[in-house]
Each structure stands twice: as structure tokens, then as C-alpha cells.
Image 1 (cartoon, rainbow, N blue to C red):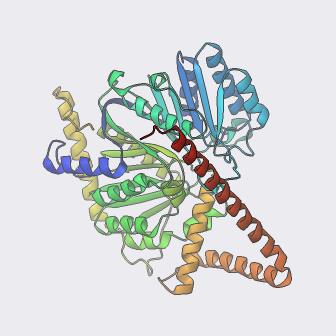
Image 2: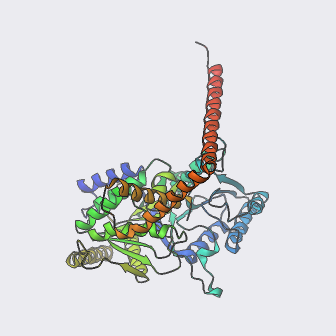
Image 3: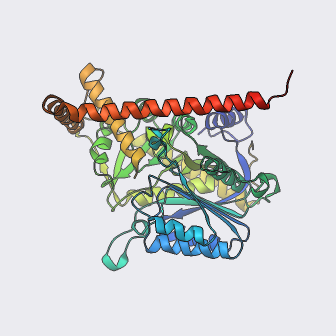
Length: 503
């Protein structure tokens, strides 16, 4: 990010570009706290629910009906029993095999309003592609949590059995930004039924400042692509460092090129990904994209623990993002996602410290010296570290002198599998059309695609009905969906005409 003071014309232009790109204004007066793993996130969530007086708005992609899930169910039921309005929105596909109907019925019977996001619909054959991948909790008008954590024992681990917890990251937010998080929940809630009355939603203007952090609430929806544009803009604006953590990295060609250009321009670009994924088929797909990054000087690390599920970014010790969005097409274009982007040096510095701790538990992936096209520049890394030390020393000096901070302008899933399929398709297309040079890491991806096509060919030749019948059923379902929607739209138009006043 540009190092100029926040009131400089260049800084104002950067703020305008970020706001327009993300479609989210910069909100001041907030406090933000970094929460690491379930050990810090779950107790904070449960404490907030236990103190709820007016409302609880909770949405999550996956909720497990296990010891952790039942602990949250008990807390939500107790809040409803105290008279708080408790709303829970879960993703139908994400919870398909993790929580039983009895789990949700128990909540409903106890006064919790429960809705499923995007269940199967006759009029939407491909509706399952768009999922609510968000993980948020908003309590009263006081505190909200945004994270990458779902609800389940795997996130907490099992010390008795020696099972380590999943590595994940979340934040607690207080201040005016809480109202934007609540509004994001309300928009998703309205897709599954009646909307929340406006007078039940918090108003940012009535929430007292809780700190001096400036935040953006990035509430992504399908096809909006605000975060996709923002991620590329951050890669373009980064001057010194860009450190990324992602659970299901399947970068598009344009985003990979943005990271490559930043690295070749001297930016210290790092990518931390799982060494072992909870979706095993994605590991070779993700690794197939390492080579172009490594050749440009991007440093890639694989986590050595059971699963790295965090989705974070920190740039230049000034800007940081935490939330539910992965660096793949499913998150950027297909899902409902929620992230917090903070422009706060103290928070970004904390993020950098945690990132370096994480790297101590990871293995760096390197190319052989003969194959390295452009080695990372040690001198550039040293200069970056020295500039960071100078900035921190200046901040400490300002604090010691009692100077205020400079003012700022206010203003594991089906989706991951789909993203992997897109990567396989890109490799397959590149191989057939000879669009680019393919690496050895992509051999497995091409073998998978070739094997699948060979199997489809055999089925079509030997048992043509095995191929024809599914295609015919899909075509019939799509035709029925279109006819039903056309009928409903026609009836709606006629009702509107009849209710319109005469000329």
C-alpha cells in the first residue's frame, strides 16, 4: 500500500479506488481483535451469546451435530429463552451430512428462528452452485464476529486422542461496523423468507465509537466480484509485502499474474496453503498452480498440521483481510462470502506476527536451482524488513509523544470442488489448444481429465443409455424450470396490470 500520509492526494485516491472496487465504504471508530483457532473464537462467540439481550444473528456454512454443535445449540436456546430474538441461517448443502433434522427442530421448538439457505428447488436446477459460505455472528448492536471457522469438533481438536485443532482465523468487531455486518446477514436472511424489519437492525450512526480502527465490511454475493477486483487491486498497490493464507487456493490466470507481477517488482509475496487438505482431490489441483508463482519469486509454504482453513491477507503492514473467502472462483464469483478488511497498522502488525509464527510450522516449496527462473532477492527482503522496523519505531515515538493517529477518510465445500474443476478444465484446455507451457506438476491433473474422458467414451460406446438418460433428465428438468418460471412471471405481470390505476 502507498506509504504516503493518509491525508495526501495519493492516499485519498487510493481510498477512493478501494471503496469503489470493493463496493464497501471505509468506516471509522471501530475496535478489532484477532482471534486465533477455535480456542479463542468459540469461547468469545459463546460469551457474546450468553450476554445477548435483544438479538442474535448467526450464519454458518457448516454446523456439526456433535459436542461443539450441541454446545452452541444450548447457548442459542438459552438466549431465546431470555427473550432475545435469535435467528440462525445455515447452508443447506454445507450441513447436508453434518446436522440432522432433529438438531434444527430442537432449535425451532425452543424459540429460535431457523432457516436453510438455498435448498433444492424444482425451478432452479443449478441453484446448488451458489452457497452461503459466510461465518458470522452479530449480537445486539455491540459485537460481531467474522471468521473462516465453521462449528464442529474438528476445529477444536481432541486433546484426549492427540488430535490437533484446525488452524483458522477470525476477528471480533465493535463499533459502527457492527451495523454493516448485521445488514449483510439481513440480506442473506431475506433470500430464505420474510426480511428482518428495518427497526430491528442496528444503525451505524447510533453506535458509539469503540476504537480508532477503520474497516470495510466486504459482503460478497454471486457475480458481484467486488472482492475479486479488490484482491487484484491490493496486489497492484502493494509496495513491500503481500502475505496470503488460503485453504483452497485455485487462482485464476489474471490473479496469478497479479501476484507474479508484484513479486517480479520486488514485493515480498508469500502464500501459505494446507499441506494436507480435507478435500484430498484438491491438493494436486492446487499444487499444479505453484510453478508459475515460484518462477516469478513468490514464496509458497505448505502447512504441516492437520488442516489449514484460514483465509487471510496482510499487505505492507497497513492493510489486512480476514473472513470466509478463499482465493478461487467459487468464493470470488459464486458464493455469498463475508470478510473484514482493516486499514490499521496495529492490527496489520499483529497479523504479520501471527503469519511468521505460522510459517515456523510450515514447509517451503522451492524449485530446483537449475529450474529457478528468477530467485527471490534477499536484498529486497532486507530493505522491506528495515522499512517495517522504521515505521514501527515512528509509531512508537508518536504514541510516546501522545500524538493521535492521522485521520482517515471514512466513507471444504461444493464451491471448492467446483473451483478445482475449473482448474482441471483450464489445464485440459491449455493442453488441447497448446495455449501455454504446462509443468510437470500438471501431469496428474491431465491424467485425471484424460481418464475421466476415456471412461465416458467407454460408457457412451458400450452403454449409450447410461450417458443419454442423465443428459435427457437434466434437459427435461431445465425445460420444466424455465416453463414454471415463465408462468410465474406471467401471472405476476397480470396481477400488476390489474392492480395498476386506470389512466
